[in-house]
Image 1 (cartoon, rainbow, N blue to C red):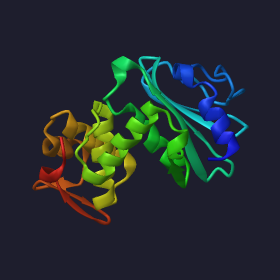
Image 2: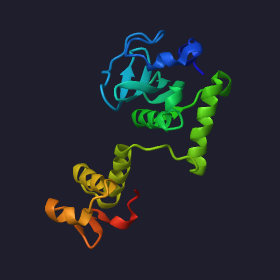
Image 3: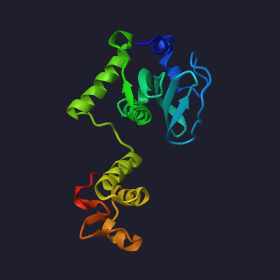
Image 4: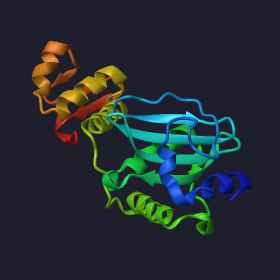
Length: 206
């Protein structure tokens, strides 16, 4: 592990909860760019020194944080992970990891000897999820909508807005085909039809 990652990751292991702090308020990181949300959201705080911190908020309260460090803005090393005790086992750290993977080409864990015991446990959970698909993080309704939306877009080529509207109606248990007549959605006989393919409503996950 390079010296930057080592310095940032382990200088404050005794109090990982500091990574939930407001932007620019974490010892050892310094100034950060990013706006703190007031509702439910994932914020990204970027330091000019190579640190990127992802923080999950529920009703404006920080519940989970993931910090990565990078020298080239392409490869990132996971430096710190922390979730409040009452928010654990709900998939927050995994969602933050996915956000980091969206921003960096490669996101990898620190070397074994440089990881805290909590970090090793979380790494093993993530690894098991990818390899065995036995661990399914608890999803919010919005996350379910986004998952169904992406499925619709992938198979049909419909726009993001239309796919999300259909996904939202499906997750909320509404009569999608009936709404399709009102909204002019391309759905007929239980099949969504788009410019690049079709998808049956019956295969959409709940």
